[in-house]
Image (tube, rainbow, N blue to C red; front, side):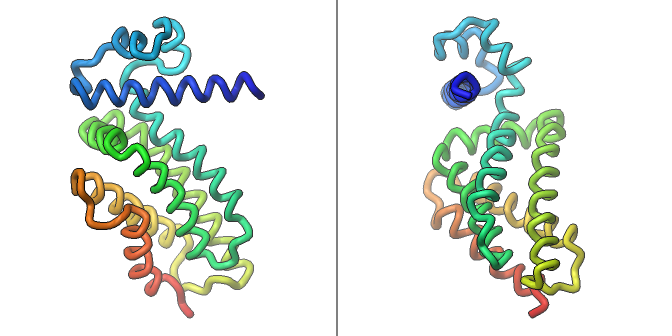
Length: 197
């Protein structure tokens, strides 16, 4: 278990150091050699974690999915599905904003690359599935009544989530509100059309 924890810490270190270099020099200009030198690791060690430089950017989605599972478990006892979803996605957004400049860079690079965007869609699909499961449980437990199918609701919430990230990313260094508050406000608007109560 300790070994797995150390491996995860090293992967996170490589990710953050690489993003820092990408920010300073531009994604295309940074080499794997520079990343390994900054991390103090051998090239072989780098390739144990990432097959190529582009995969570093995909770790953003991968790490968010790990956090998603942890957050769902943490908020499992919240009765109301809207509050549970707000807390779960709020955790993801807080993580995103805690490394704001680096996460903005990763988001922009993923949006520029069709290959990276295609790979990132796997993480988006997992997020959609988890939200649909929360909604299904809420309907089965009588906590949510809606005329919409859970897949449609989950798609709408995922859309709000990524719109929040995109808007916040494009705002630059001085956003007018926290990313979590922005998401909560937008979810409040769409939830009125979701909840049949």
